[in-house]
Image 1 (cartoon, helix red, strand yellow):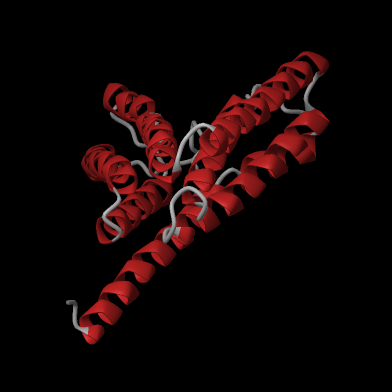
Image 2 (spheres, rainbow, N blue to C red):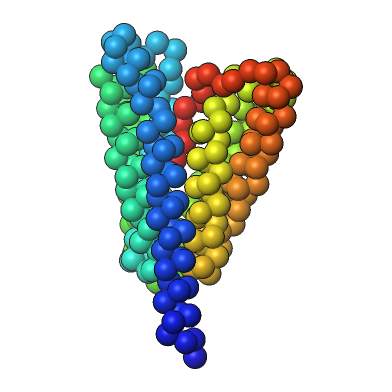
Length: 235
């Protein structure tokens, strides 16, 4: 039997890690705002793509569904962070659709409908086909795949930094926030004994360390600071 005081401390630490993850994720969610301010100001999407925000929305929806009590009881902080993220992505996509040229608008609208259709299928199958235990496993594996692919996206930036020996396209605070968010949810997953949270965020933490190490090495080497991020989509 776990002593009451110890259980209370354990719960507080678990919730603290989840709340910290929510706060650091918020920094990532607002990071594309300068891009969309530019789009609104110029009334054009220019060379920007809506695809990163479409994918970010799908990632948020899958992770949101995994965090819902009907799928995974006791990890509501996963649902809260991804519900906020989904709202941000929907706002970004809406702005993109308003100012995009016709071809981009049609393509992005089609992808958005595909995201909603895919999410509907996932939700339908998880409720009607699987029992509670296998439902969590089914959605959990989808969550892991989605998160790992999201955390793998900075590999392009890492490769670019090494090739150019410049941190111009890797903003320090964005990399730091990504690292801290990953660590927070890694700890949260450990506390909750949930490998579907801890494993992908553990991988994200390692990639975050690599980004920060590269930033430290190449910023000292070149004396450059970072400017605008080349890729501005995180979830």
